[in-house]
Length: 51
Image (cartoon, rainbow, N blue to C red):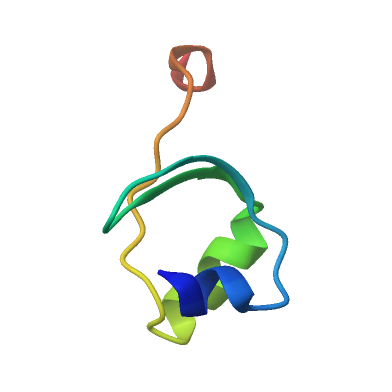
């Protein structure tokens, strides 16, 4: 987790747990984290985004 937070990427962290973060992150940053296999990403969105 600490290594992930040290990366020069824009992460607006809302909550930090031992093995998880809740953060606002751009889609391009999420894709880069996935491409590099640095983190498992679970996207959580607002209900209004689905309507």
